[in-house]
Image (cartoon, rainbow, N blue to C red; front, top):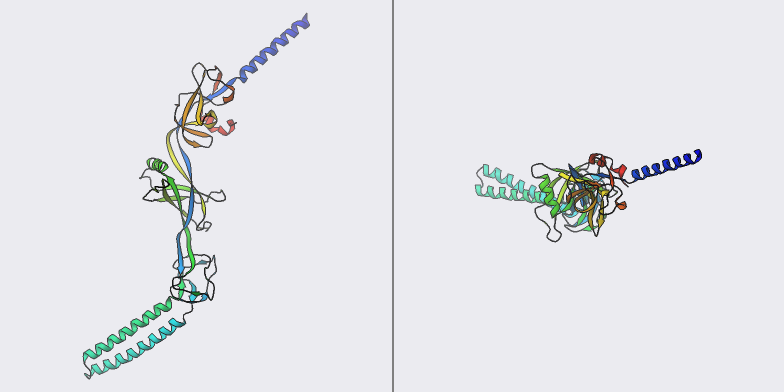
Length: 357
């Protein structure tokens, strides 16, 4: 009799334990959307350009006599880079110097005669004009000779050579390129809609916008850049407008022609935010399960405005007073009544990685 009573009590206790466990298992976590000021990060493919990138070309025709630098070398402003064989121009300069000397002697003799009133003032003026002309021709020959020396117009890095020592180069022929990489200009295209959002949220009185550069190796460049220029016109074919950001490049890591991605933060004021895991998709439309005051499950379509890691910014379909199902979306059905446990939205967002399935 006692043994039967004990078995009955044990059976009853076991049933109660299973019932309590079942109740605990069927409690679903819910939360609410939260309004807050935040920002999103837009990413754009970009092209990296030197702040100064020019072609160095021959100014005169001749044989390339000397190359004083190497490809990839850093050079200083005014440094001699190339020398084109100047035999012809040296000869012209020597002839011009001789003619100048002759004209100077002739002028001095005429001046002495004019001072003694032996020749007329007009003859002295003619001698002076002849001397001035000879000096001008000498200066011109000196300039032409100077054209045979190619010097760096600014500090920079030499690109690959397009000619080799001893090559016969024509006037205007490309020798190499020179890049000033102390600062870099980074160009990227922004779609029209995002440009309008950017201008409406950033405004025109907040100054320049700070951006980050994600390099081709998927690492962030250590220095931030500033958006300094937005071009005047949209490209009618693509619907984009070019932005230009300037980045300091003290270590010379960035080079002309590199690619990467610009990460630009855009502020969002009073945004309505929910966890991504609280949503599900049907025919490319987003839905959430809303729990009413009686604990009944109702599906509701929402419109997503922006996407962030683990979060959505809701454009329409919810407000901060709604309660949405956070977990167990596959375990409930439309119009089903469920037991819930409410979690504060701030806590959910703070520990979203912990709650993520």
